[in-house]
Length: 444
Image (cartoon, rainbow, N blue to C red):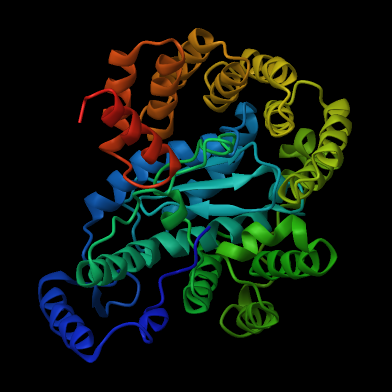
């Protein structure tokens, strides 16, 4: 997750002439790219139309969902969460957006929204909630980001600055990984920007809109208060389990206190609206039974980040005892085995995962990496080809196909894939490798 673009970072490097250019460019862009904010009605810099928001969402959200181990295979749970989301979406400022709501298999605590209306809730945070009103508060908050066009506004600002300082692509290189660390190279190109940290002002506005939307849909404002209380409590008790959410959604005591005050003032007469606790507990019963597994997987992820691979393996193994066929857990274990350079075990776990969830792509990638470690390049090529068929548009997969062809001594097809990769990514170790091979083989 990257931090939101802040022009203060450039104050020490831009000259007075640069600032004059920026001011002129801002004036031109403001004239050509101003739009009324759908929430406030005020004019704001907006270099992105609604159709572009939807297209960016359509291209990138499937890759992020896959990076989070795919959409849950529990159709009933997905339908329940989607039903809550659609009930709220009908009362938003941009009810015309193509909203869609998904539970993703990731076990860390988070929720996020893409600019066109695709919203994901992790299993990890669902296990922490106590009632449907809290879920409505969570979804309402994400709808707030979409309706206030927070991502589009941030990307418009980045486009403006990028034009001045040389136009580095908003997304180029976001998927770059070193050749020795390919386990995580499965996310969408633009996800690091699209899911970047929101400003505190964005968060405040999303909180306000979220409570407005949930109360409008018939939920007690106490749902938002309860959600904020859960998040601040987890921040104290389990900071590592919730750091991803706090990275993209800065949390503070002030946000909790503001929610309490708003619920009593603006929505004081709505306190007795229902929380729908029993309905939530019934609809999430199977998921909540897995809560001990989620905690173990979170501990495993923390150990992986610290490169304590033996510890991580132990936590993942304990978690898989709770649910041996959990797709996310099997892929996590495959990654852990790859980090320990155990290609055989990694291939075994990845193969189990793809058999359990054959339409989800990440296990195919992991099996491909494990196959390359074992120098089984033809198997790896089949894996990456299957991944690209399931989830096209990830340039890392194109590079891995080229690398597999290279291992098979097929320079012609390797060069074709490396060329295709370099049209999308022009920096990082993979790009350097692809370029050097094309040059050595006489294709450049």
